[in-house]
Amino acid sequence: MKIKACVLLLALLASGCDQPAPEQKGFAGLGTQAAAFTPVVPGRMFSFPADHGPHDGFRIEWWYVTANLQDDQGNEFGVQWTLFRSALKASPEVAGWQNQTIWLGHAAVTSATAHHAAERYARGGIGQAGVSVAPFNAWIDDWQLRSQATADDPLADVLLSARDRRFSYRLRLTPTGPLVLQGDRGFSQKSEQGQASYYYSQPFFRASGTLDIDGKTFQVSGPAWLDREWSSQPLTGNQTGWDWFSLHLDSGEQVMLYRMRQKDGEPYLTGTWIDARGQVQLLHAGDIILTPQDTARVAGRTMPIRWSINIPARHLDIAITALNPQAWMDLRIPYWEGPVRLGGSHAGSGYLEMTGY
Image (cartoon, rainbow, N blue to C red; front, side, top):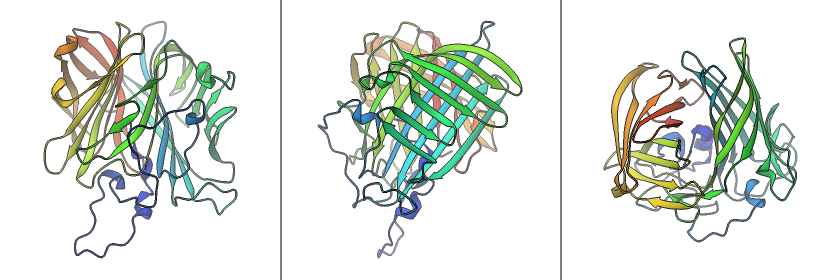
């Protein structure tokens, strides 16, 4: 899923309301009405490499990478990199200061004992941030997700880099499997009312390179996951946040799950099972038992940092534990995000994001 806190400025998109009660906006404004923007409907045909680029007419969009890394001594790290595109109007992109697009970047590094996060902002149309398709490059300032491959398959060889005062990383990403359409052939539903996004992933990336944290440099490698998602109104006004998991099983399979929490009613729960060849099965709420098991105090709030996941039809019964329970993204809109370890019926690693707590 990976709807993130990309929509800091989406409150600007909400028009005035004549009703007595204010419109419910959902977490970070993602539930505000978006009638002027392009709706997300089932049956869309995806086209690559064009869909690696931006999508005019949609209100929000992101390019998102996580990586579970180790050095030669077995020290574990997590890396996150995200670029968000937020449209203030439904009109096409234009050059210069009349551009109506806001770009936002998030980057983080996590170890067992440290977690550092940073953010960048940019106005569209002036070259400070953007995404191009040929050649593929997603950037904000000197943070980059840039292809080093041919235009026909720009994700065959990708450079990922970010730098801040307390950390930096430079990683090469190469795929070992195909792209995956999440949900129903890329139509990813977020509520019983039909809110949805278009969503695909590259869950088979392998990452290798250098990572610096608190003045120490490490040579690292491990599995990585790219998510691409775009929408105009992905939440209802009743949805207060989510718990999202991307999991690399040592068997070669991958799992994506998310639980959308609501003010009233049960959470909306769904996911995708991805086999080692990239074949997918849509998971419904009845297929998944997702249960918080243990909590920790994080940034003055109680967060579930240990979970159990049971998918009986796939003989999956695992415990998910945070590498660093204090992986709090202390940004303009704060949330929890960090690497997790897997134990039980399957070993592996992954990433967890929790918002709205």
